[in-house]
Amino acid sequence: MIGFLVAANVAVFGTLGVVWLVAHQVASSVSTLQAETLDLAEEPRLSEPRTFLLIGSDSRANVDELSTDFGTFEGERADVVILLQVLPGEGRLQILSLPRDLKVLWEGSVQKLNATFSLGGAAGIIETVQRETGIPIHHYLQVDFAGFAGIVDAAGGIRMTFPFPARDLKSGFEVSAGTHLLDGETALALARSRSYQELRGGDWVSIDADDIGRTARQQDLLLAMVTQIDRPSTIAGYGELLDALGRFVIIDNALDPDDIIQLAWELRSIDSDDFDSVTLPVDTSTEGGVSYVVERQPDANEVINAFLAGAPLVAPTSSIRVEVENGNGRAGAAAWMVGTLDALGYDVVSTVNSARTDYQITLVIARPTSLAAAAELVARLGYGHSTVGRTPAGADLVVIVGADAPLP
Image (cartoon, rainbow, N blue to C red; front, side, top):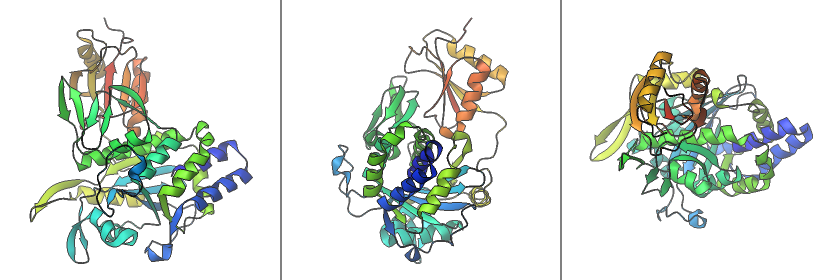
């Protein structure tokens, strides 16, 4: 994906010959697997939708260059499992995350989805995902821990806003409240976080601290990186990016330069409005002392069918849910904002004091897929700034009231 977008950058600012050169460099820099050994679906025409299986491997083979301690587990498992569909004719992307603990069948026995990668490699998890979901997979991409960090660094980092100080003692993630440019190692620690906490009211509180919460954070990181990378400044780091791709990325060899050129052109103007992302609806289940997640029906089938049809993955809601935080220290600021949002038709689900009281500008924080809604709210308020960041479960937007709010 990052290779496509760098090529797309060149497509906007360069000539056709440069685009051709970039596409061949991207294709030749990465390691490849023989497509005929992977049981991939038949290659569609360039103008037709195609689906990639993106695997984030937990291999420790290259993490020695990172300071974070990821443990010394042998082998590798699929820590991240994402189906990514490109809709060339519409210039859209759809992302369907599959929880790694999803209960599946593997050669007649019950397994977790991520185990099929360690048991059968790329071919094993491709076969399992296609059989369990019915979604044809046309291409395969694999990135390991160190590779994700290297790609983030080569892309110039990922800018995200955190309403509260956040941490994960297990993954090593830690940030203060506010907007941060995450480097590769910090972004990786967030992507791996399953024990995510926020400092609220003086106490560290677990927020979406499970596998489902982690897949949402992984989606946020991926979408933030994709929407932020198409900047001319990323071209300057092109050599570093190619190095990261070449060292840590594996693709199937059916993805050739022609595909990259076509997809790069289709994605040249993509932004957050052109994304759909969702995690497969699941419930927890324990069998024989082993914890799994299982598809929640009929919700799971509805999501899969929408993905197959290229239809919206999330049903529209009648109102947008908002958490309001007092970020300027003035008594009654949050309550005043609640009244303002109520009058505008928003659904305020909670009010809290922010971790900081020095916000000069009101922030409207949204996940990448809700950034358009955040920008619309800023426009309706007539002040403030919209930004990509973390929102708690049950809220689409977080409004931090700053000193610019026209309080009575």
